[in-house]
Amino acid sequence: MPSSTFREPDADPTRSRPGRHARRPRALAIAAAGVAVALIAGAAVWASRPGTSPAQQPQEASADRPLSTPSTPGAPATSAAASASASATAVKKPTSKAATQQAAAPQGGWIPVDQAAWNTQLAKYQATKAQAPGDAGNLPEFRADCKYSHRKADDPIVFPGLPGASHMHSFVGNKAVDAATTAADLTKFTATTCKPAVDHSAYWVPTLYEAATKKPVETTGFRVYYRSIRTNSTGIVPIPNGLRMIAGDAKKKKPTPRGTQGQFYCAFYGPGNIDGDSRSTNGNWPICGNPATLHYQLQFPDCWDGKNLDSPNHKDHVAFGTNDGCPAAHPVRIPALTFDIAYGAKGTKAGYYLSSDPDGKSASSMHGDAFLMWDAAAMNQRVRNCIAQRRTCNNSGYDPFSY
Image 1: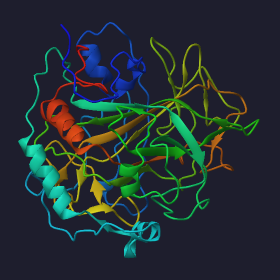
Image 2: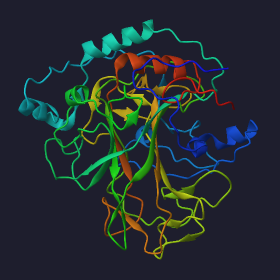
Image 3: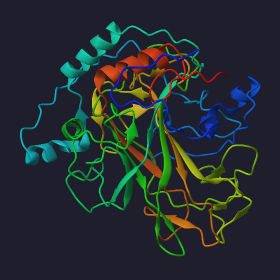
C-alpha cells in the first residue's frame, strides 16, 4: 500500500537513503520486533560543558542503552505543554546587514524569541490536523538527509560576524552560511543540500583530517533526525525558527581508545565490530573491516526554556527532559535533533584529527551546531503527523518501513 506524502515542491521519495544503521539507538527494539536486517549499533558520547547542570547534560547512548530512556537526576519535571507560551521580549527585525550582525550577539549572548511570531506558529500548529498515516512505522520521527556543502573557518553561532575566528567547520544544509549569517538570512537564501528543501537550516561539525596527509575528510552522509526520545509525545510542539544549539564540547581533549563512549565507530549493514577490527597507532581511531566506514552520532536536548533562541554558552536555553516531562526552567517539549554522520573513510594507522583538536588527535572534541529554520507550515505538519502521532516519517512523507 503506498504511503501518504507531504506536499512540497522538491521532495524526492525515490532518492536513495542512508542505511538503516541510522536507527542504532532503537536497535534492541527493532531486533525484538523481528526485523531481518541486522543493524550495527554505535556508541557515542555527548559531553556537556563544564559547570552545566544535570538537566542540561546530554545523555550517553550505546547499543545497550537506547536514547528513549535518558535520565536527568534531580531535574524537576513539569508538563511540557503547560508553558509553551512563556513570555519574552520580542526581537525587532534588523534593517541592515550591519544591524543584522549586531543583532546576532546581544548583550550577554541571550537572544530572545520573537514572542508574537512564536505565538502565531503555535496557534497554527494547534490548528494543524494529522494526516492519515497509512502503513507508516511506529518510530516518532522525521528527518532531513543532507550532503556536504562547504568548508569555512566560520561559526555564526559562537563567533557571529567574525569571519575566520573559528576552527575549520564542515557545513551541510543551507549553502549561503558564513560568519555573518542570521536567522533572517536563512529565510532569504534558501538553497540547500538537504532533502526536504523546506528545511532551510544550517548544520555543521568540526572538519575531520587525515593525520598522515592533513587532507580533509568530508561527510558522505549527514542525516538529521527530528524525533521523540521519550515514551510519549505529551505536549510536543514545533521547534521555533531561529533556534541555535550546540551538542558536544569543542574544548574536551581526552583520549578515545577502544570501547570509550564518544569515539568514532564503524557501521554498515550486517554484523561487524563497531570498535574497528584494529586501531590507529595512538588508539583513538578505529580501523573498520569491510564494508564498514567511520560514523559518529550527536544527540541534542528535547526541552526549551520558551524564551530564548540562544544563550551565552549556546546550551543553557535547552535541556534534557524525562518521560515525565521537561524541567521547570525548560518547560517546552520540542523534537530532539540527532546528527547521524557517515564518512567515506575506513581508518588508517596514522589516524585522524579534528580541527577542534589538531594536537591531541582524539575524537573527544567532536561537536555539532544547529541553526534551525524551516518553512513553518512544513515543520508544523511533520511534528503533528510524525511525532505527536508517533509515526515514522522519512524526508518526504510517512515511511512504510515496519517494526
